[in-house]
Length: 220
Image (cartoon, rainbow, N blue to C red; front, side):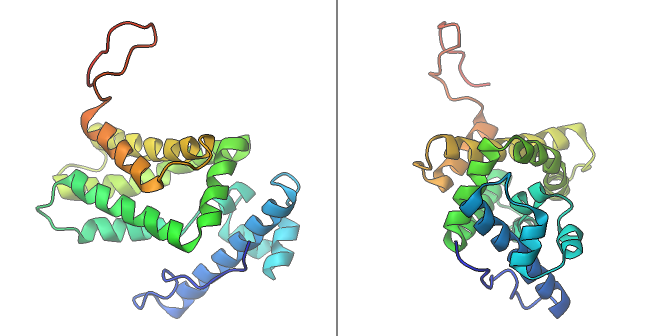
């Protein structure tokens, strides 16, 4: 694993110096965490070791990340996702906007940190504490999506339908990471995102047999 690198996210001109420093500190803590986990495993890695490797105090680690699992799961892309969705043309079909932005986010993550992207997915699959925390943290990203969906559709972000739609997508994207790791990262990650959006749009494709071996049930 490499040391923390400067990210385009941390250098966006609209961010103030204080916010850019926060982003760099978070990235340094994550880089230290991933390096330690790669070398000695998740369970053996302590917050004390992370702080020492990142050259910050333990209190600083906890100020940015309440738990060790949060270090693994948190990134800087949620705000970018929200900004990009709002920047898409107002007359563009919602799912087209979503597909474009998600694939762009995946491409950015992969081009910047391919090793980290794989490691995070593997930890989601293999470490129960990380998987559990991932499920807990999905609600925050879900609320973000609810706000954007509501703006684009003219609905209330608290509507049940909006919330179900947003959380269905978040749950699907979480399964993308786990599926990718289960299959030894052989699939193209952007293609898996495409398939996920297709399921959200059209349901299960026709031709899939039922678990009992009966006839295909068609789309849902």
